[in-house]
Length: 291
Image 1: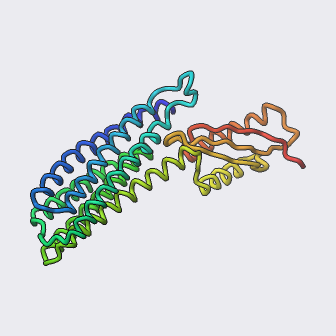
Image 2: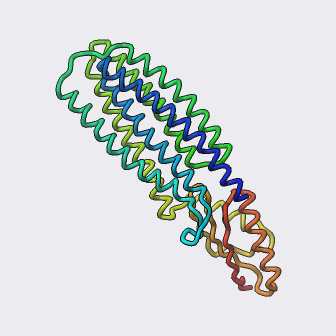
Image 3: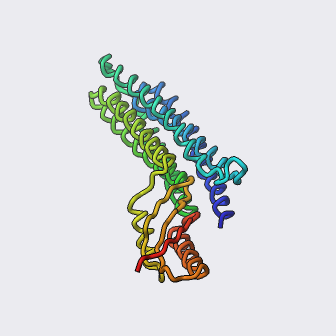
């Protein structure tokens, strides 16, 4: 089972590499056309994709480091390496997002009157289509290998496709004597970059600080209570190592059971949580239930 998780991480590298190659090509095209066609929105979109290159590289590094086996000073393994990489990427993305916002707001106050060339709109449409197909690929891959990191990359791909569509709207609108609409769209792109960076930061810090979804905890407890000979659940906690949930649970059993019977119950609890929720590891503590 553990080897399968390592194999999934290796397979997840493929999605990160595809994202990196797509972002390199599309950011180069957007920045070149954005400068030559005089489109602030397309330039902002291109800068957005450069941050996505960094984020995808961080995911790739994290996936590779997470594959390292446990050692003497990492007895639980290196699963959280991808979470740390995501945190670093969020800092870089917020810096670029703020830079885009400053440049776009400056263009608005400068009162620019020129409209970008219409070719920038066609480039935006082309890039949106490409990113949608990359999103579909990474989403299917993430569902197949159950990787939170690859699914996060897929959601980022989808947001980039939406950003490109928004860029096209701003560029086309600028053709109708509304040149201010192009830098205004660039402001929206900058805000989306900052919002994406914040979401990555929030999720990464929630994971690293051992935060866990309370509804999932409730589902764990309900499942354990349905197991025969479990009289109650005194406490249940969980945390994530990368994409791998680890559960600590205290169950109540009849006080007159012998050690072997109590051990068998705890084994059933472990097996059921692993089977139903694909939990990586379960630590079960048994306490006597007062009759």
